[in-house]
Image (tube, rainbow, N blue to C red):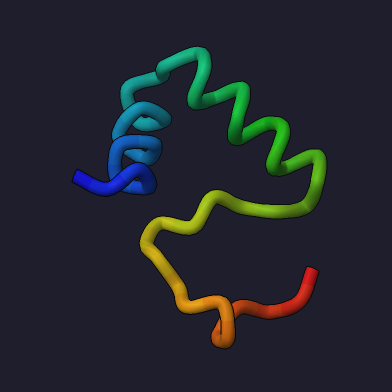
Length: 45
């Protein structure tokens, strides 16, 4: 299972560490991608 999938499952289960990661990403105006996206197809920032 991929890390992104495990992270999403952990968030859905209310895991405190996963939720802290989500909060940190939200503060940085970023997101944990739900699946791997090639770097060339990612938007800057």
